[in-house]
Image (tube, rainbow, N blue to C red):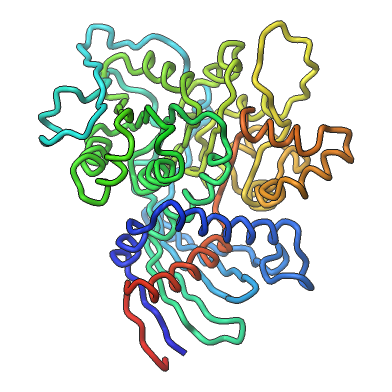
Length: 443
């Protein structure tokens, strides 16, 4: 049987060659696997929850951890082994009160505010229409100082044990996480404005997949990152490299902005971008909330329905969304308020109920119960999920669709080995078909 080896460079090139139809096909396969994970049994599918062993972690020096993530589909078995730096645990419990909706202390700092609307021919450093917000004040740390990009590999074997794929893990992990997070995003009615916290590989893939899936409808992309230079490098790549050329040309109304807490009027712009966004992607290894909860929980913040995805934090002390945001999302709606509020579903969508109850900082710190979570695999197939809602006295498919399309939807993910296996299978097949990587016959 042939064995295909894909390096990070091979995977990067392969993924950047994908068009919208390719991405939709990959999402459909992943959605089916996640649905089987949530609803299947050992008798019906290899993707079921009981066939996915718990991952094992081995701690090392310098806050590094090696993860062993075995998983299974109906056709493959595999294991991802990855080492990554983890955010150090805070020395006290005061982090949740350190982020407040207060004016910037650097009120005398100068600032600029313009926007990119068309691809410039000159380097980013010379762009006269680039939007940056700069602040001289410092905010309490919201992320670890070390990169948390995983370094490792994914090994794939057939159900009968024959090895057929060996893939580098870094690019694959970032892509499969964004692929899952944009599945619910692609169901949204309004995607005019999106905000992305972070500027690493996760953030890049969230931006790219959002533009591939809904590019003509997106007009504003706000990149919010604590490090200005890293965000500017991402912007440079988007506006100057051939890999982004087609997406740059596909929408002449698209503009980008960068907001950094190193820059002036950061608090004002942060609030403005969060409030105006139709979708918010949180892609940072944060140990404190990325923005004050009242941006979304106040009467003004609740007027608009948003899709909020939090994929950057994956341990109990790590957190991107303030617990109050999750508590409000699951609180009973008595409909006695005097303001127009966007619909909420009463649950948080997660990739894995058991994993998020054990590892997700937002879920743990909000003291949520399993009844307040629903796995994405249960709601991706709308017709099947609506049957449960009807049984509980709800509107069924109509109400579920209305919530997924325009209500307040929060998706929390800590990552599943099943995602790696499912997407890895497809990438091996695509690599062979399109000439990426190296294939060894008769291995």
